[in-house]
Structures are given as structure tokens and as C-alpha cells.
Picture (cartoon, rainbow, N blue to C red):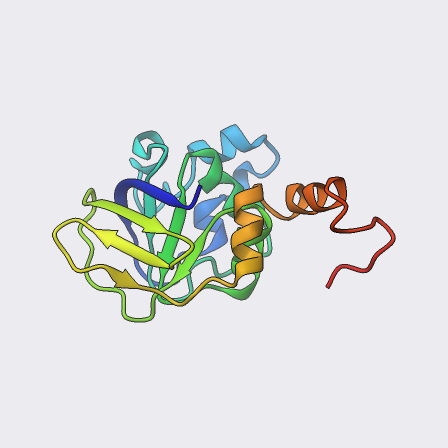
Length: 172
């Protein structure tokens, strides 16, 4: 499935991994960490975000530590994609590894919180209610395949099960 639809959640530049998965809660499971996602920026986010919603961020989204929980909490809360002008490198890698689509849109227009939005991963397009379709940077086909499979581990398991990859073969 590559088309999603939901509401927009809009945040600014430099949203870091500690805002997404606060360090004080890292000793707990993902459900508890998720309850505190973005609470320092928008205390209502974790309680009000719904499956199908899309997060719009500013530059350098996901800066900070390499904690995978920063991506995992967004998936746990039902966020289906993050759209931003740029992403921190480790967050970008973790997003695809965990099956969360990240769309890079350097010329991101103003989006109103709560506005109806949708995205198509295959074509890297974002649909914003009452606005022209936004064309983002293309997502490489191998990353689209990983997203469809639910992330890197399920993707590799599917490839091994289908005979496309041997467990002794080096992954490129």
C-alpha cells in the first residue's frame, strides 16, 4: 500500500530525537515512550494523532541521537509518513529501516495543522487539501520495496523466503 490519507501535524526546524522519544522514558516500552512523543512541543500530539496522519517538519527533522525509538513511536502512534525539507542522516536511515516513509520536499509550502493530506510513496507526491500537488524528491525503488514490506528486517525475510536472497549472500 503506497497511498495514505489523514490530517497534517506541522512542526518546525530541528525536531530532534529527544523530542520524539524523550530520554527520560527510554527505560520503558514503546507504548509509554509514545505517550510522551513531542510533548515538549505540542502536549496534545500523542493523545490526538490518529492512524493515517502525516507529520510535516522543518529542516533537519530527526536531528540528535541514533535512537530507533524516535521512528518507532511515530509508527506506533499511526503516523504513516513524515514530510520535511531535510532529515538528519541517521533518522532518515532509521525511518526506512523501520518502514516509515520519509519524503524530502525542499520547497515545502505552508501546511495548516489539521488540514487533510495524503501521499503517494511511489510517485513521491503529497496531496494537500485545497492546494496543488506537491512533488517531493523521488524515493528509490529499493526503499519503496522496504516500506511495502514493513522495514528492512521483514524485507530481507521476504527476499530470503522467496529465494531472491541467500542467507550466505552479501546484501548490497
